[in-house]
Image (cartoon, rainbow, N blue to C red; front, side, top):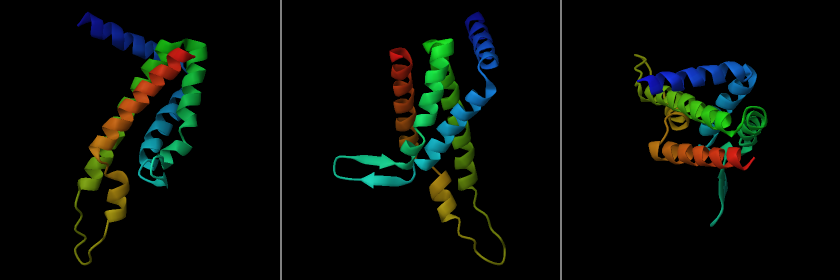
Length: 142
């Protein structure tokens, strides 16, 4: 139990030390990248890219900045925080997209909303693991 308290204390100190705007841009870009990943922009036989690639430079720039100032461990810890924030918002998006609304008189079609915000979990898990691994490699290679 003391290990968990020490880890939480370390995270609290880290999040107080890193400027809030960097943390905000980092977490926000991870969440928005996840949303933009629903749009395929290149689909060739051996190459594929989704809309998230257009924002991929923002979290890596933030991680590089944090690595230079606070070290690779701090950037990796912030990477984990951003993934938890992403999972939190994805869960909220999934709950909202699962809610069925009856408007009474007319039927309202929310299929576009549901296809954007209602995610497929295997894509989320795959992209989360890829982001975490690439972040760790990026942090320690700097």
